[in-house]
Image 1 (tube, helix red, strand yellow):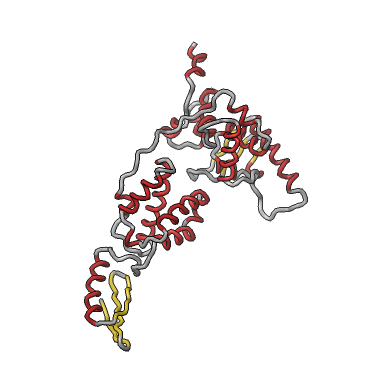
Image 2 (tube, rainbow, N blue to C red):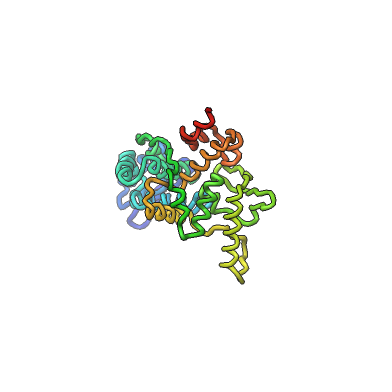
Amino acid sequence: MATIRKRGNRYHVQVRRRGQTVTRTFDRLATAKSWIPKIEGDIERYLYIGGTEQTRVLDLLNRYEKEILPTHKGYQVERYRLGHLKRYFGDLKLVHLTPKEVAAYRDLRLKAVTPPSLKRELTILSRVLTIASKDWGIALPQNPVKMISLPKADRPRTRRLEKGEEQKLLATTNDKLRRIIILALETAMRRGEILNIKKSHIDFQKSALLIPSTKTDTPRTIPLSTDAVTVLREQLRASERQSEGVIPLHETTVFDYSPRGLSGEFLKRCRRNGIENLHFHDLRHEATSRLFEKGLNPVEVATITGHKDTKMLMRYTHLRAEDLVGRLG
């Protein structure tokens, strides 16, 4: 349904269709009349975007960051990736977000990041467009992210600590980082799980640790080795000395690193010691493999690591042939 009202020397047009209302003012009546069927046709074919032809990709990204992002566990890392999308697509109008534009972004980013990192960024863009279409009433004719080809992912990492690397990592003068490294190698915990540990989560009598918030949304309790208990006690004492006389309003975490801060500090430590191609997450791989080498079965290992999929668990497991020789006899 469309209406035309003359206001002074101009013509005000309002189009209502499929729950959308679009208005525009023209100097000439003939132009106003010719505009109406075009807009009605676009709305019918879901080509009209957001009720305004001026909607930018940045508008959607900002709304997603404000309304949706805070509900995600990994919002800090996701916000970082969102920043790359804003810098590239921010000033682009939504009507001009074509598969060609997304493909250009793909080719540019692949010069700086790995295929898995690129896929994570484009997954966010695709999610924003899907939410805009389904929940925000913005009619999108297509999702351009789904219309481009993506590079094949690299083979899963199989990096384990080489001889002497653990000693180099633990020789750091940063006691907090040293304790985190030991904890990662003893428990196979993820970075975020370690950084979310609170004193109330630790049961020293049972040598157990509750992990209430996990990547799989399933809380789990893991056993703690003697070394893990020792470094947790050390860190609690250090934290209490630092906060002496200060009573926090809320229970704080045992370790005060940010996720990116921890990864950055770990990378610096590796560079200083000439350790190449080692990420903090590789410590989870190492720890998981060590659990198998200690003789634990897959169910027992999965109970500790939190893996629900056996295939995924095996991706994190890289047993050394030389370590199995003694068991073969």
